[in-house]
Each structure stands twice: as C-alpha cells, then as structure tokens.
Amino acid sequence: MKWLCVILFNLFFYTHTWAAPAKNLDAYWQPFAKTASITVDHQPWQKLLDNYLSIDAQQQTFFAYAKVSPQDKQVLNHYIASLSALDPLALTREQQLAYWINLYNAATVSLILDKYPVKTITKLGKGFFSFGPWDDKLLLINDRKITLNDIEHRILRPIYNDERIHYAVNCASYSCPNLATQVYTKDNTQALLEQGAKQYINHSRGVSISQNKLILSSIYDWYRDDFGRNDADVIKHLQKYAHPKLSTALTNYTQQKSTAKKYHYNWLLNE
Image (tube, rainbow, N blue to C red; front, side):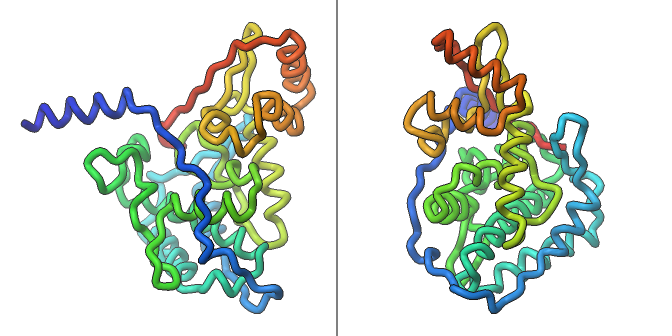
C-alpha cells in the first residue's frame, strides 16, 4: 500500500499543472490608518537577511538555510510572533504593504527551516496531496487564521493592484524573484519593488530569448492578467525594466510577430 501511495504522489507531483489563485479581496483587511502612530520593528528580519542571504554576480539572491543557528531561528520566530501580535489595520497603507511582504517572506523562510533539509517547498503542506504550504493556516492575526495565499491573493494583490508585488513575495524557489537583501519599510518599498522587477526581468529565470523563441517565467502565465490584457501588454511591462540588450531582443521578437513562446519554473530551493 505504501508503494502505491508513493507512486500516486509522484504521478501527481510531476504531472500536476499548478493553478495560481485569482485575486479575491478579503475586505476585512482593506482599512488603514491615515497617519502613522505605530512603529514596526523589522530589524530582527534584517539581521537574518544580513547573516544568511547572499547575492551572486547575476544579481540573484540565495538563502543559506543550512547555516541558520538555533538562536537565529528563535529570533525569526519571535519576529513573526511580534508582527502577528500587531493590528495591521492600525498601520498606514504604506506600512501595511511593508508589513505583509516582510511577514510573508519571513514566514516562508521559517517554514523551510522547520522542515530542512528539504529540496523544494512544494513538498510541504499539511494535506496528503498538497502542492506546497500556501493554504495552511500558519498565522493568527486579529484572531483570524491566515495563510500565505491569504496574504498574497486576498490582501496584497487585490488591495494594491500592483504587478510588482510578484517581485516582492518570495516562494523559496530558484525561479522565484529575489528575496530582497533589505527589509521593506514604508519609506523604501517603492524602490525595492522597482529593484526587484529589474533584477528578475534581466535574469534568465525571468526572461530570455533564444533563436527568436521567448522563454518566460511561468509567473507571466499564471498571473497574466496582472501584467495586462494580452501578450503585448506583458512585453510592454518587460521592456519597462529590461536592459538595452534585452529590450532590443524583445523589440525584434515583436516586430517579427513571432508566437514562439514557452514558460518555465524551477521549484528547487533557493539555496
């Protein structure tokens, strides 16, 4: 029986087409404070990023999960608990954006550390056939149980309607946009969103063109509507952040009216 379960799981894993959740606003989280009256301390998270996050010559970041000390894992747990104890509705709109991004990323790293060593986040999840932990009730905020999918698809995407959100929340995978080297704050979030877009689009895991075939991250397939109404809108978005060489290649691709296109995503851990 055990071998049959293993076969069924592997069959599911390797043939499963992951369907990204749609935007579905949870209106409870929509209100925000007009003026800042609370200071949110993100420095514990910054300490972990400083200690364990590196960036290579191609501007991709990697997290050294294997090196995290028990003490720093406790720091991370306390940071997540401190954010969960806050009332996000008492924060300004700018503070909330930073709050939710940092909480999502910190909680994701914590999940990996809890199960490490693990090769991919898709192996996590409480259900037998779960494809990742995104629907697990991980957090308790304002007496409401919250999942990672709640944060991304029912708070961040529908409230802010900013496609750059996809470059901020990190799924602990190789093909995911960078885990930023700096914590998000009310003052630096817009700059970090721009930086994240540039780093991802100008890396081959985000966009590449070979023999007039456009190879895109599956993010641009799963969340196509966030980037525009059609393929032309997606190209326009990419060119906004593309370096000159890539921008020229994208222009040539569109001028030749090529339809050769494929999507890819590598779920192996970003370590």
